[in-house]
Image (tube, rainbow, N blue to C red):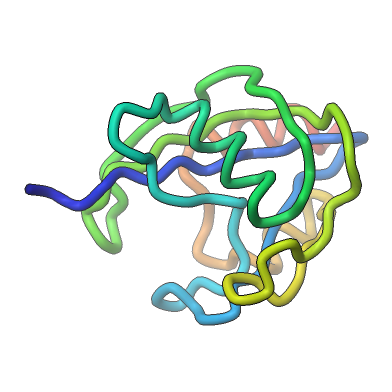
Length: 131
C-alpha cells in the first residue's frame, strides 16, 4: 500500500496567504501551507479544510482545486486546495505540530519558501497577491 496522499490548504485573504511553520522541518521545508494526510475515503478538499481547522483553529471553506502532483521530494501524492476564511483567527492550535502561523504577502512567501512553490499554486498566488 502506498503512503496516504496529503492535502494542502492555500488559504488566501486580503492579499495574503496563510503559512504555518512546522515544529520539525520536513526535509529543508519549515514553512508551508496548512496540510495533512487525507483519511481513507475522505475527499482531498475536505482534508484541506479539516487540517486547517486542526492546525490553526481557522474555519475555512473550499474554493477550488489548484492542482495535484506527486511531490518531487518524497513522491507522495499532493492536492492543493484554495480555501477562504469563514471564521476564526489563525493561531497555533496544534502545538505538537506547529510553532508559528503567519499571513504572508508575496515577498514573504518567496522568503519563507525559497525552493519555490508548485507551478499552478504560484500562478494563483501571483494573480491574487501581486494586485
